[in-house]
Length: 72
Image 1 (spheres, one colour):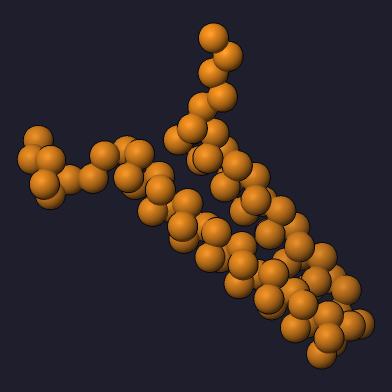
Image 2 (image 1 turned 135 degrees about the vertical axis):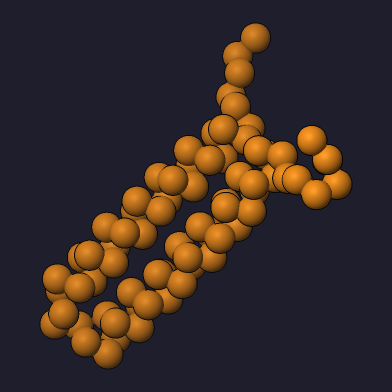
C-alpha cells in the first residue's frame, strides 16, 4: 500500500464530512428561500427538512466515528 497515493479511512471520512456539511448548509438555504418565495409549498418544505435532518444524523455518526467518546 502506497501511503502517498491512498487516503486513510479517517481522511475519507473527513472529506465526506465536509461534503455532507456543505449539502446540509445548501439545504438550509434552499428551505429558507422556498419558505420566502413559496410559503404554501408545505410538502416540499417538509421533504427538504426531513432530508436535512437525515444529513445531520449522518454527520453526527461520522463525527462520532472520527472522534469516539471513550470513557476511560
